[in-house]
Image (cartoon, rainbow, N blue to C red; front, side):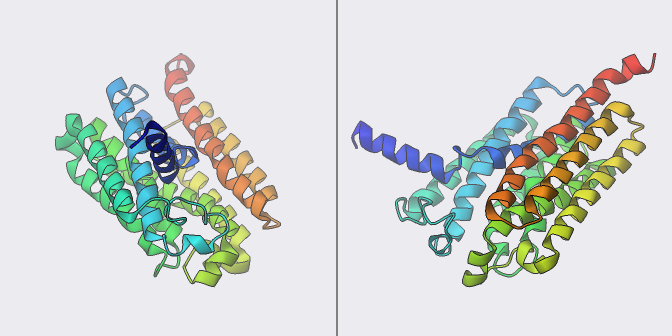
Length: 295
């Protein structure tokens, strides 16, 4: 294979892994960082941060490849996805499955330093990532399943830091499920007409004319659960300031999705990066300023 041919294949693999669209990786990373900082009381080991950050990228990339493999016969009929490498038949199914296997293997090798404490959670995470794309065929709210898959870094982070998940870790996971329902319903609203034609299930279709209300209620549930977590941990103003900023961002998302325009819904989905970042900033500020505020 020539250098130009190799570069072309690598470009296609990059698109298949969505490395050119980092928003998905960020939406996985933020809740994982919430958990790492809370579980370690604001002092996570640098190696754990590196492992979870790179592991998040690898697993998200593998999930995208598996998703495109599962949807290879649907994507050509959806305007937004018709040019994806598998949908356009520019990459073979064998190449896609090999790439997914390599990415999952790399992610598995990455956790070997903390393998004994989280190996079983790693296996569950792989199963969730591999099975999510198929839930759209039979589950009315596949976005809820996505919330578990996208948030499974939370229990893994708690187990890696403390040796167990505990109620706090599972509570944060529930908060992430509601957040994923909010942002991925916004995402599904972009493709609603195409999804109806090809017969797959999404939250946007299930919620119907109550989709905007459902999204806002999911944001409210996310913030409400996180507020309870903050109250239980006796967090103070910095943490709740982060939640307040996140609530303001959710309000802004309402202005983007209320008319159900595709561009507005997609912009709201992408803007959730800042929602997750605001919550993380509040956690970091709380745990770093707490000793000073206590004086």
